[in-house]
Length: 527
Image (cartoon, rainbow, N blue to C red; front, side, top):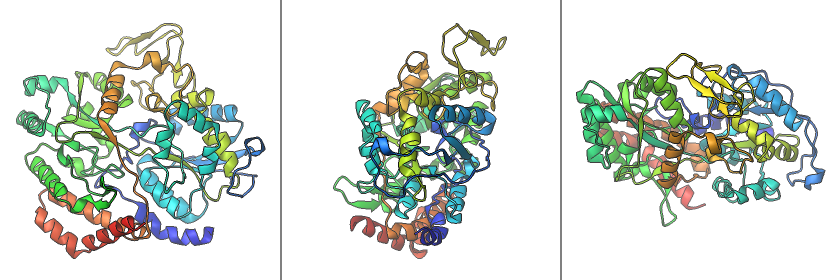
């Protein structure tokens, strides 16, 4: 099976790569970690265990002595003391952990190369796009029964987190475990800009939003920037929601259960017109096509633009802190979705998957995947990192003598200075405490969570809807890579004024886009 899969995946690697124009972010900044990961040397394959797909009773599951994990920058990187994090994890779970961590911005290119090469890790993090595709290709172990019979499910159900897991099932089967809810983006606007350039008025609809953008530009500022005109994974439109509104560039399921391609609908054409008009008016930063999320953050911190749609929760604090560090007014307004948007989109969370070649998948599930959400010491480590490295409760003063000086009393939980980005504090590790699926005992976030973090998370929770996981079909695997490349190229050309909407859709027809789209829609509706 493995040899057959490798041959199939040499082509599938390109098919699963749905990168948006200029979006190098993988949308994973929401989960924490560093934006500049490095790679460590992989160790040999894991050992021991049976190959059967049906898990043994819990007390008979063999504990692996060593596993190899493939992770992105949402896990602590080497500059952020990954060695100390892994050493503590090994101490807690009693398993040697070998880490493969490619550069965050090129993570899925590397995943594809590793999978196509055939030397698969035991565990890997996958976003929704790649999760669905690799599950269909047989790369991932079916953990449904292991989860159904686990204590983890009971803990998640007790904390109302099991519904998130149900949402990542594919045809009733579970091939990956989310570590937290997906979360999503809200639109932040600098309060100082609203006061100075928009007469203190916070927009509630697109007409008012447009007026605000025009006022910013009239004062020599770009209004909006984003990591590409379209995102690299579902829900694709989450960085520019005010312009997309009800337009959607990919496949979705209507209320009656039928699947459609939103790119072919009038709502998408109207969204393209709004984007093109905004770009022509100078509202949108012209480097948006090639921006990564880090580029956007740095420009926001430098006061280059004033409207930034980015992750709710922890990132509200990160944005505020970095503006303060640059000597700027840090007050941000988290906008409720404007009337035409209605609701922000809650993304499908990344998942931790076990490869189908893992020698002891039951043991890896029980002692690694399940332990990550134990509600105790292991989950605390995945949530906050290592004491004395990433957090502390010692009495101390951080950034003494600066405008951002912070004084902590003995016993007061706080993040320590970021090793990779001095001047900012760690706020979390891999699991965002506000998005956890299992209740963490003695969670210090209950008392230490910043007001802006709580406010943006609450706003998002009350004004969002869940994105839908699109299953993979043979037609999807065969055509969607080329189809997405075609769509993204046309979107960029229309937005930047290089092509009219009518010309774009004529080219879409001429280059088989409509044909491929219909075959995929038919395959989804005939499943």
